[in-house]
Image 1 (cartoon, rainbow, N blue to C red):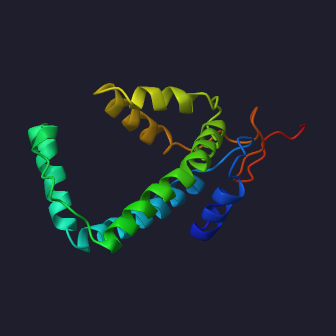
Image 2: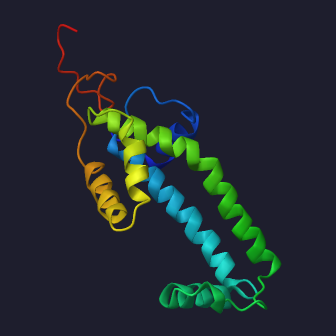
Length: 165
């Protein structure tokens, strides 16, 4: 049975350091949507804060020019923007470990080893190869997990094809 949005987020935090078992597709994609919503709201607060627009424009110029010396030293962000930026960093740090654990359980659902998370993280840090690795990971996580039980546990969707098991 597919998890609802709330169930997926609760399971995500309940399994904060649990790499055992399997995670179905809905568990992964609902959590990804939850994280995108949080980051989008905080980014909007940063953008709307005093100096937020200039910060984003400067980031855009830096990406285009690829020149770190072109940063204007007079850039400043308002209090609400600073708080939102700090909250973004705290949210990212708080979700780093459970995100890895969820990815491990998602690979387990596909019948694969959790060490693939490390392989994709390393490949993701490399230029160009990182884009291909991220795309491959994205597509892989769209696939349905193995039917029935596998080496990592019972099917989270409840399809148990192992009658004698």
